[in-house]
Length: 116
Length: 113
Image (tube, each protein chain N blue to C red):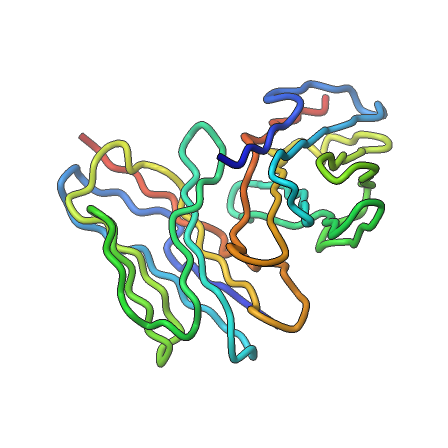
């Protein structure tokens, strides 16, 4: 069985602060994919990043960066110099890469509030 | 760009009514999903479909049914709406192969009174 835990229910920061959203997962699969999605107040989940279990390289995209550590089963997401537009609910998800199951497991989400 | 559309953004129905939520995707994806989202509970999978006329129950199928007569369209049906089905409903689609991620519609906020 798969499980994704986002222990932080809500995080509140002031603009320009750095913030890290935690994601810890459990799986018996040897190959899998990890995802982050952003859900702004408008409601539509937007895909941010996919990482496969073979690739532990960290990734940076502008103010966003992701730290994948297989040894600790974590895939954390950092926003540098946060902005009000970053306010959203962020979901981490896990999906097996093989075995026929393509159903992702989502964490419960972390609500990020960035105050001006 | 992949587009997933849902028939309504907001919907208000009465208890006992039959409710249809429609979802259409334009990227020829094999897989389609219906989730409901409630505060503190995250996304919960109601049903999914991996092909036309094929459907599988998710984690919370009770009180719901689905229909997929065409590849691009996946409908969620509430046979007799109840107040505990007041929620945000999200539709998603994904290919079986790469790139694997799901594409979501804007959601339908359903209120049952």
